[in-house]
Length: 66
Image (tube, rainbow, N blue to C red; front, side):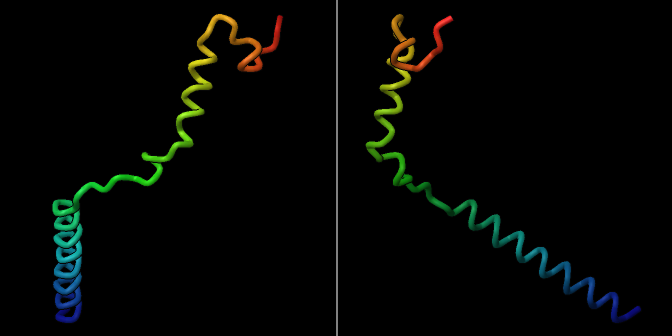
């Protein structure tokens, strides 16, 4: 019984320490900008979506004619 009590106490201390470390890391973390946010590759995708909103979008977007 003594061994189990010591083991559970050590497990509680270890889990509490991990929780405190994770919480501290989350609270002190600063946001960083993603390199993909500044990529110029996103602009053509937006342009293609805008072209698909046009009235003559069947040719641009490849919509099959009925």
